[in-house]
Amino acid sequence: MVAVRSHEADQLLARPAAHVFLYLFHGQDAGLVSERARAVVEKAVDDPRDPFQLLRLGGDDLAADPLRLADEANTIGLFGGRRAVWIEAQGKTFVPALEPLFAAPPEAATVVISAGALKPDSALRKLCEREKRALAVACAQDGPAEIEALVEREAARAGFRIAPDARALLGSLLGEDRLSTRGEIEKLLLYARGAPEIGVEHVEAVVADASSLLLDHAVDGAFRGDYAALDAGARRLFAQGGDVNQLLGAALRHALGLRRARLDRDAGGGHGGGFGGARERERQLDAWSAERLARAVEILAEAVRRARLEPRLAEAAGLRALWSVAAAARAGRREPGPGGRCGAPRRGGARRGRRVRRRRKRRVKFLRRPHYGHAQEKGGEINALPVRRAP
Image (cartoon, rainbow, N blue to C red):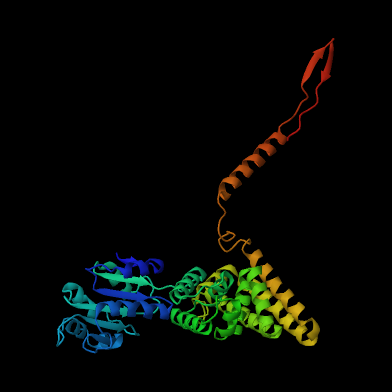
Protein backbone atom coordinates (compact mmCIF):
# COMPACT_ATOMS: atom_id res chain seq x y z
CA MET A 1 0.00 0.00 0.00
CA VAL A 2 1.75 3.16 -1.26
CA ALA A 3 -0.30 6.09 0.02
CA VAL A 4 1.56 9.33 0.68
CA ARG A 5 0.33 12.01 3.05
CA SER A 6 0.39 15.63 1.96
CA HIS A 7 3.21 16.71 4.30
CA GLU A 8 5.40 13.79 3.16
CA ALA A 9 4.89 14.36 -0.56
CA ASP A 10 7.55 17.00 -1.24
CA GLN A 11 10.34 14.93 0.28
CA LEU A 12 9.36 11.78 -1.64
CA LEU A 13 8.82 13.58 -4.93
CA ALA A 14 12.22 15.25 -4.69
CA ARG A 15 13.81 11.79 -4.99
CA PRO A 16 11.22 9.51 -6.63
CA ALA A 17 11.77 5.78 -6.57
CA ALA A 18 13.02 4.29 -9.84
CA HIS A 19 10.36 1.54 -9.96
CA VAL A 20 7.40 3.95 -9.73
CA PHE A 21 5.92 4.91 -13.10
CA LEU A 22 2.39 6.08 -12.14
CA TYR A 23 1.51 9.01 -9.88
CA LEU A 24 -1.97 9.90 -8.63
CA PHE A 25 -2.42 13.36 -7.12
CA HIS A 26 -5.77 13.97 -5.46
CA GLY A 27 -7.22 16.36 -2.92
CA GLN A 28 -9.21 19.51 -2.30
CA ASP A 29 -6.40 21.90 -3.25
CA ALA A 30 -6.59 21.89 -7.05
CA GLY A 31 -3.64 24.26 -7.28
CA LEU A 32 -1.40 21.95 -5.24
CA VAL A 33 -2.54 18.96 -7.30
CA SER A 34 -1.60 20.76 -10.52
CA GLU A 35 1.72 22.00 -9.11
CA ARG A 36 2.89 18.56 -8.00
CA ALA A 37 1.72 16.89 -11.19
CA ARG A 38 3.59 19.45 -13.29
CA ALA A 39 6.74 18.96 -11.20
CA VAL A 40 6.70 15.21 -11.91
CA VAL A 41 6.09 15.78 -15.61
CA GLU A 42 8.99 18.24 -15.86
CA LYS A 43 11.32 15.68 -14.30
CA ALA A 44 10.06 12.88 -16.53
CA VAL A 45 10.66 14.52 -19.94
CA ASP A 46 13.17 16.95 -21.37
CA ASP A 47 10.68 19.41 -22.87
CA PRO A 48 7.07 19.38 -21.57
CA ARG A 49 6.06 21.69 -24.44
CA ASP A 50 6.92 19.03 -27.00
CA PRO A 51 3.71 17.14 -27.93
CA PHE A 52 5.77 14.06 -28.81
CA GLN A 53 7.09 13.92 -25.24
CA LEU A 54 3.99 14.96 -23.26
CA LEU A 55 0.47 13.84 -24.08
CA ARG A 56 -2.54 15.14 -22.15
CA LEU A 57 -5.70 13.05 -22.01
CA GLY A 58 -9.08 13.33 -20.33
CA GLY A 59 -10.45 10.65 -18.10
CA ASP A 60 -13.70 10.47 -20.07
CA ASP A 61 -11.75 9.78 -23.29
CA LEU A 62 -10.03 6.81 -21.63
CA ALA A 63 -13.34 5.57 -20.26
CA ALA A 64 -14.64 5.42 -23.82
CA ASP A 65 -11.45 3.77 -25.15
CA PRO A 66 -9.63 1.92 -22.31
CA LEU A 67 -6.93 0.43 -24.56
CA ARG A 68 -5.69 3.82 -25.73
CA LEU A 69 -3.65 4.47 -22.58
CA ALA A 70 -1.58 1.30 -23.02
CA ASP A 71 -0.92 2.20 -26.64
CA GLU A 72 0.17 5.73 -25.81
CA ALA A 73 2.36 4.69 -22.86
CA ASN A 74 4.22 2.09 -24.94
CA THR A 75 4.63 4.30 -28.00
CA ILE A 76 8.25 5.09 -28.86
CA GLY A 77 8.89 8.68 -29.90
CA LEU A 78 10.27 9.59 -33.29
CA PHE A 79 13.54 10.78 -31.76
CA GLY A 80 13.53 8.37 -28.83
CA GLY A 81 13.62 9.52 -25.22
CA ARG A 82 11.07 9.23 -22.47
CA ARG A 83 7.38 10.08 -22.70
CA ALA A 84 4.79 11.25 -20.18
CA VAL A 85 1.03 10.93 -20.20
CA TRP A 86 -0.90 13.41 -18.08
CA ILE A 87 -4.48 12.36 -17.35
CA GLU A 88 -7.07 14.70 -15.87
CA ALA A 89 -9.72 12.70 -14.05
CA GLN A 90 -13.24 13.75 -14.92
CA GLY A 91 -16.66 12.29 -14.23
CA LYS A 92 -16.33 8.76 -15.64
CA THR A 93 -14.12 6.04 -14.23
CA PHE A 94 -11.17 4.83 -16.31
CA VAL A 95 -9.80 2.18 -13.97
CA PRO A 96 -10.03 -0.51 -16.72
CA ALA A 97 -7.52 1.53 -18.73
CA LEU A 98 -4.95 1.34 -15.89
CA GLU A 99 -5.07 -2.40 -15.23
CA PRO A 100 -3.17 -3.39 -18.42
CA LEU A 101 -0.39 -0.94 -17.47
CA PHE A 102 0.20 -2.62 -14.12
CA ALA A 103 0.14 -6.03 -15.79
CA ALA A 104 2.83 -4.91 -18.29
CA PRO A 105 4.46 -1.65 -17.11
CA PRO A 106 5.86 0.65 -19.81
CA GLU A 107 9.61 0.87 -20.05
CA ALA A 108 10.07 4.56 -20.91
CA ALA A 109 6.87 6.33 -19.91
CA THR A 110 5.53 8.08 -16.84
CA VAL A 111 1.80 8.35 -16.19
CA VAL A 112 0.50 11.22 -14.07
CA ILE A 113 -3.13 11.47 -12.93
CA SER A 114 -4.60 14.63 -11.40
CA ALA A 115 -7.94 14.32 -9.64
CA GLY A 116 -10.09 16.13 -7.16
CA ALA A 117 -11.04 14.93 -3.68
CA LEU A 118 -11.36 11.13 -3.78
CA LYS A 119 -13.05 9.10 -1.08
CA PRO A 120 -11.05 6.28 0.53
CA ASP A 121 -13.27 3.71 -1.19
CA SER A 122 -12.82 5.26 -4.65
CA ALA A 123 -11.84 2.62 -7.21
CA LEU A 124 -9.07 4.81 -8.66
CA ARG A 125 -7.57 5.61 -5.27
CA LYS A 126 -7.75 2.01 -4.03
CA LEU A 127 -6.05 0.72 -7.16
CA CYS A 128 -3.17 3.21 -6.99
CA GLU A 129 -2.67 2.67 -3.25
CA ARG A 130 -2.60 -1.10 -3.71
CA GLU A 131 -0.06 -1.22 -6.53
CA LYS A 132 3.63 -1.10 -5.57
CA ARG A 133 4.65 0.72 -8.76
CA ALA A 134 2.25 3.61 -8.14
CA LEU A 135 2.12 6.50 -5.69
CA ALA A 136 -1.16 7.98 -4.45
CA VAL A 137 -0.36 11.44 -3.10
CA ALA A 138 -2.92 13.38 -1.06
CA CYS A 139 -2.89 17.15 -1.61
CA ALA A 140 -4.49 18.82 1.40
CA GLN A 141 -4.94 22.55 1.69
CA ASP A 142 -2.02 24.43 3.17
CA GLY A 143 -2.30 25.53 6.78
CA PRO A 144 -0.72 28.65 8.30
CA ALA A 145 2.54 26.81 9.04
CA GLU A 146 2.88 25.58 5.45
CA ILE A 147 2.06 29.02 4.07
CA GLU A 148 4.64 30.72 6.30
CA ALA A 149 7.29 28.19 5.27
CA LEU A 150 6.47 28.74 1.60
CA VAL A 151 6.62 32.53 2.02
CA GLU A 152 9.95 32.32 3.83
CA ARG A 153 11.41 30.04 1.16
CA GLU A 154 10.27 32.16 -1.78
CA ALA A 155 11.37 35.41 -0.13
CA ALA A 156 14.83 33.99 0.61
CA ARG A 157 15.13 32.78 -2.97
CA ALA A 158 14.37 36.30 -4.21
CA GLY A 159 16.80 37.86 -1.71
CA PHE A 160 14.21 39.39 0.63
CA ARG A 161 13.77 39.41 4.38
CA ILE A 162 10.22 39.29 5.69
CA ALA A 163 9.07 40.51 9.09
CA PRO A 164 7.57 37.86 11.39
CA ASP A 165 4.24 39.69 11.70
CA ALA A 166 3.96 40.03 7.91
CA ARG A 167 4.70 36.33 7.49
CA ALA A 168 2.09 35.44 10.10
CA LEU A 169 -0.46 37.69 8.40
CA LEU A 170 0.13 35.99 5.06
CA GLY A 171 -0.19 32.60 6.73
CA SER A 172 -3.59 33.56 8.10
CA LEU A 173 -4.90 35.16 4.89
CA LEU A 174 -3.78 32.69 2.21
CA GLY A 175 -3.99 28.95 1.78
CA GLU A 176 -7.21 28.03 -0.02
CA ASP A 177 -5.33 27.22 -3.24
CA ARG A 178 -1.59 26.76 -3.82
CA LEU A 179 -1.53 28.44 -7.25
CA SER A 180 -3.35 31.53 -6.03
CA THR A 181 -1.04 31.61 -2.99
CA ARG A 182 2.04 31.56 -5.23
CA GLY A 183 0.53 34.29 -7.38
CA GLU A 184 0.01 36.53 -4.36
CA ILE A 185 3.55 35.86 -3.12
CA GLU A 186 5.07 36.72 -6.50
CA LYS A 187 3.05 39.91 -6.66
CA LEU A 188 4.17 40.82 -3.14
CA LEU A 189 7.84 40.28 -3.99
CA LEU A 190 7.51 42.44 -7.09
CA TYR A 191 5.77 45.21 -5.14
CA ALA A 192 8.36 45.18 -2.34
CA ARG A 193 11.37 45.36 -4.66
CA GLY A 194 13.87 47.86 -3.29
CA ALA A 195 12.56 47.71 0.29
CA PRO A 196 14.96 46.45 2.97
CA GLU A 197 12.27 44.22 4.48
CA ILE A 198 8.75 43.09 3.65
CA GLY A 199 6.37 44.38 6.32
CA VAL A 200 2.68 44.26 7.11
CA GLU A 201 2.06 47.43 5.08
CA HIS A 202 3.27 45.68 1.93
CA VAL A 203 0.98 42.74 2.54
CA GLU A 204 -2.08 44.91 3.16
CA ALA A 205 -1.32 47.04 0.11
CA VAL A 206 -0.81 44.35 -2.49
CA VAL A 207 -2.67 41.16 -1.53
CA ALA A 208 -5.60 40.77 -3.87
CA ASP A 209 -8.96 41.55 -2.26
CA ALA A 210 -7.28 42.05 1.09
CA SER A 211 -10.47 43.40 2.65
CA SER A 212 -12.31 40.21 1.77
CA LEU A 213 -9.50 38.12 3.23
CA LEU A 214 -9.52 40.21 6.39
CA LEU A 215 -13.27 39.72 6.63
CA ASP A 216 -12.84 35.96 6.44
CA HIS A 217 -10.04 36.12 8.99
CA ALA A 218 -12.19 38.02 11.50
CA VAL A 219 -15.33 35.95 10.92
CA ASP A 220 -13.48 32.65 11.18
CA GLY A 221 -11.87 33.88 14.39
CA ALA A 222 -15.28 34.63 15.87
CA PHE A 223 -16.77 31.23 15.00
CA ARG A 224 -13.59 29.48 16.12
CA GLY A 225 -13.60 31.26 19.49
CA ASP A 226 -10.26 32.95 18.76
CA TYR A 227 -10.47 36.39 20.33
CA ALA A 228 -7.00 37.42 19.11
CA ALA A 229 -7.76 36.58 15.47
CA LEU A 230 -11.13 38.34 15.66
CA ASP A 231 -9.62 41.48 17.18
CA ALA A 232 -6.67 41.57 14.77
CA GLY A 233 -8.84 41.03 11.69
CA ALA A 234 -11.40 43.66 12.72
CA ARG A 235 -8.71 46.19 13.62
CA ARG A 236 -6.92 45.80 10.27
CA LEU A 237 -10.23 45.95 8.41
CA PHE A 238 -11.23 49.21 10.09
CA ALA A 239 -7.73 50.63 9.51
CA GLN A 240 -8.19 50.05 5.76
CA GLY A 241 -11.51 51.89 5.75
CA GLY A 242 -13.74 48.87 6.16
CA ASP A 243 -17.23 49.19 7.57
CA VAL A 244 -18.63 47.35 10.56
CA ASN A 245 -21.84 46.72 8.61
CA GLN A 246 -19.78 44.85 6.04
CA LEU A 247 -18.23 42.75 8.79
CA LEU A 248 -21.58 42.00 10.42
CA GLY A 249 -23.12 41.12 7.07
CA ALA A 250 -20.33 38.67 6.33
CA ALA A 251 -20.69 37.11 9.79
CA LEU A 252 -24.46 36.79 9.38
CA ARG A 253 -24.12 35.13 5.95
CA HIS A 254 -21.50 32.82 7.40
CA ALA A 255 -23.76 31.82 10.30
CA LEU A 256 -26.70 31.17 7.98
CA GLY A 257 -24.60 29.05 5.63
CA LEU A 258 -23.05 27.17 8.52
CA ARG A 259 -26.46 26.44 10.04
CA ARG A 260 -27.81 25.25 6.69
CA ALA A 261 -24.82 22.92 6.33
CA ARG A 262 -25.23 21.67 9.87
CA LEU A 263 -28.92 20.89 9.31
CA ASP A 264 -28.04 18.99 6.14
CA ARG A 265 -25.42 16.99 8.01
CA ASP A 266 -27.83 16.18 10.86
CA ALA A 267 -30.39 15.04 8.29
CA GLY A 268 -27.83 12.69 6.73
CA GLY A 269 -27.35 14.76 3.60
CA GLY A 270 -23.56 15.24 3.79
CA HIS A 271 -22.07 18.69 4.30
CA GLY A 272 -24.79 20.69 2.65
CA GLY A 273 -24.22 22.47 -0.61
CA GLY A 274 -20.47 22.08 -0.49
CA PHE A 275 -20.21 24.68 2.23
CA GLY A 276 -17.96 22.54 4.42
CA GLY A 277 -15.14 22.02 1.91
CA ALA A 278 -12.32 23.77 3.71
CA ARG A 279 -10.77 22.34 6.84
CA GLU A 280 -11.71 25.45 8.80
CA ARG A 281 -15.38 25.04 7.84
CA GLU A 282 -15.27 21.37 8.79
CA ARG A 283 -13.96 22.23 12.24
CA GLN A 284 -16.69 24.81 12.70
CA LEU A 285 -19.37 22.34 11.63
CA ASP A 286 -18.07 19.92 14.25
CA ALA A 287 -18.00 22.57 16.98
CA TRP A 288 -21.43 24.18 16.45
CA SER A 289 -24.87 22.65 16.79
CA ALA A 290 -27.88 23.83 14.79
CA GLU A 291 -29.56 25.25 17.90
CA ARG A 292 -26.54 27.33 18.91
CA LEU A 293 -26.11 28.54 15.33
CA ALA A 294 -29.73 29.72 15.36
CA ARG A 295 -28.93 31.76 18.48
CA ALA A 296 -25.83 33.19 16.77
CA VAL A 297 -28.00 34.24 13.81
CA GLU A 298 -30.34 36.06 16.20
CA ILE A 299 -27.45 37.88 17.91
CA LEU A 300 -25.92 39.00 14.60
CA ALA A 301 -29.26 40.03 13.09
CA GLU A 302 -29.98 42.18 16.16
CA ALA A 303 -26.51 43.74 15.88
CA VAL A 304 -27.14 44.59 12.21
CA ARG A 305 -30.43 46.25 13.16
CA ARG A 306 -28.85 48.29 15.95
CA ALA A 307 -25.93 49.31 13.76
CA ARG A 308 -28.31 50.74 11.20
CA LEU A 309 -30.48 52.52 13.76
CA GLU A 310 -27.56 53.99 15.74
CA PRO A 311 -24.59 54.57 13.40
CA ARG A 312 -22.49 56.19 16.15
CA LEU A 313 -22.63 53.00 18.21
CA ALA A 314 -22.40 50.65 15.22
CA GLU A 315 -18.80 49.62 15.76
CA ALA A 316 -19.26 48.92 19.47
CA ALA A 317 -22.48 46.96 18.87
CA GLY A 318 -20.91 44.94 16.09
CA LEU A 319 -17.80 44.02 18.04
CA ARG A 320 -19.90 43.12 21.07
CA ALA A 321 -22.00 40.76 18.94
CA LEU A 322 -18.92 39.12 17.44
CA TRP A 323 -17.36 38.71 20.87
CA SER A 324 -20.59 37.06 22.02
CA VAL A 325 -20.31 34.63 19.09
CA ALA A 326 -16.69 33.90 20.01
CA ALA A 327 -17.69 33.29 23.64
CA ALA A 328 -20.42 30.91 22.47
CA ALA A 329 -17.89 29.07 20.32
CA ARG A 330 -15.62 28.59 23.32
CA ALA A 331 -18.50 27.50 25.52
CA GLY A 332 -19.62 25.05 22.87
CA ARG A 333 -16.33 23.19 23.08
CA ARG A 334 -17.13 22.46 26.73
CA GLU A 335 -20.72 21.31 26.09
CA PRO A 336 -21.40 17.57 25.73
CA GLY A 337 -21.95 16.55 22.14
CA PRO A 338 -24.28 13.82 20.81
CA GLY A 339 -22.05 11.13 22.30
CA GLY A 340 -21.83 12.84 25.67
CA ARG A 341 -18.29 14.11 25.11
CA CYS A 342 -17.17 17.71 25.42
CA GLY A 343 -15.02 17.90 22.31
CA ALA A 344 -11.53 16.46 22.71
CA PRO A 345 -11.15 14.40 25.87
CA ARG A 346 -8.79 15.67 28.49
CA ARG A 347 -5.76 13.63 29.34
CA GLY A 348 -6.42 11.58 32.45
CA GLY A 349 -10.08 12.62 32.61
CA ALA A 350 -11.32 9.06 33.10
CA ARG A 351 -8.86 8.45 35.93
CA ARG A 352 -9.86 11.66 37.69
CA GLY A 353 -13.51 10.70 37.35
CA ARG A 354 -12.93 7.31 38.92
CA ARG A 355 -11.02 8.87 41.81
CA VAL A 356 -13.82 11.36 42.46
CA ARG A 357 -16.44 8.61 42.42
CA ARG A 358 -14.44 6.50 44.87
CA ARG A 359 -14.04 9.43 47.25
CA ARG A 360 -17.78 10.16 47.10
CA LYS A 361 -18.59 6.51 47.69
CA ARG A 362 -16.35 6.32 50.76
CA ARG A 363 -17.83 9.54 52.13
CA VAL A 364 -21.42 8.32 51.73
CA LYS A 365 -20.55 4.97 53.34
CA PHE A 366 -18.87 6.68 56.28
CA LEU A 367 -21.78 9.03 56.90
CA ARG A 368 -24.32 6.21 56.78
CA ARG A 369 -22.38 4.13 59.34
CA PRO A 370 -23.69 4.60 62.91
CA HIS A 371 -21.24 6.49 65.08
CA TYR A 372 -21.11 5.86 68.77
CA GLY A 373 -18.83 7.91 70.88
CA HIS A 374 -15.84 5.93 72.08
CA ALA A 375 -15.99 5.60 75.84
CA GLN A 376 -13.34 5.17 78.43
CA GLU A 377 -13.71 4.48 82.10
CA LYS A 378 -12.02 6.93 84.44
CA GLY A 379 -12.53 7.00 88.19
CA GLY A 380 -15.67 4.88 87.94
CA GLU A 381 -17.24 7.33 85.47
CA ILE A 382 -17.84 6.94 81.77
CA ASN A 383 -16.52 9.89 79.80
CA ALA A 384 -17.61 10.00 76.13
CA LEU A 385 -15.05 11.09 73.60
CA PRO A 386 -16.16 13.36 70.75
CA VAL A 387 -17.38 11.67 67.61
CA ARG A 388 -15.10 12.02 64.61
CA ARG A 389 -16.80 13.50 61.63
CA ALA A 390 -16.16 12.63 58.04
CA PRO A 391 -13.47 14.80 56.45
